[in-house]
Length: 224
Image (cartoon, rainbow, N blue to C red; front, side, top):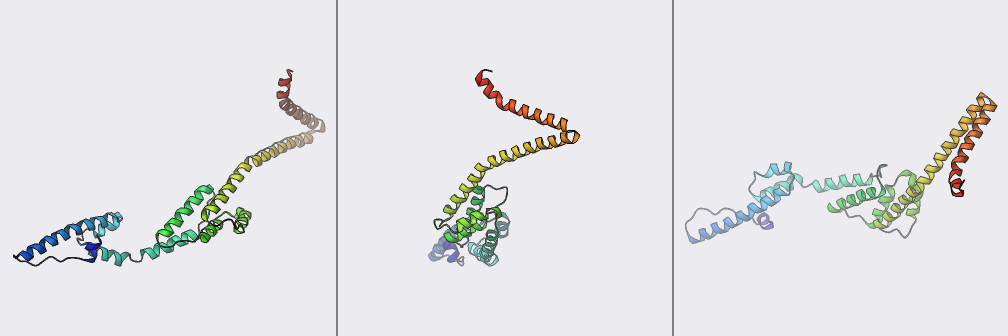
């Protein structure tokens, strides 16, 4: 394909001699290559762009026109990706693994347009993208000399997320128990408001029910 772009061939003038026949054969060979190259070039374009150039028969003409109209696309694309990457933060509904996958894809896109980030820049970008309630973790990651690559920082933040998830059920149980105690306390206060006797009876009845529930397994084992 490069040959048809850099070395275009004009159609030979009319003639009947042997040289003319050789020139025409060479031209027909060139036209076949040019047609194939043009089809390959158009097939790699978006449909809306391809429709603008499919009427052109010369690969060189299509190539030159694309360079004129879209020559600044790489610079524009780089700026868009850079702004998107610099402002990217982890979303609340994302897991850490999903977040890191998005960041890894963005780094690959930047590399594809000619902007290759250093390991240090990638590590800093991950730390910067963490939620505000991860501030303690950001400090630890920033001062950890063992974190040198994207994979290093990814491993640490994934482990931290797993640790937080493992800790979460304990907190939920504690909150649930606190709410339960609060409910019993409110009932006791309500009963006390209606009369001390009623409140005391209600309170001891609830304690009796709780003790029976707790002691059922032990009674069963003892054969009671």
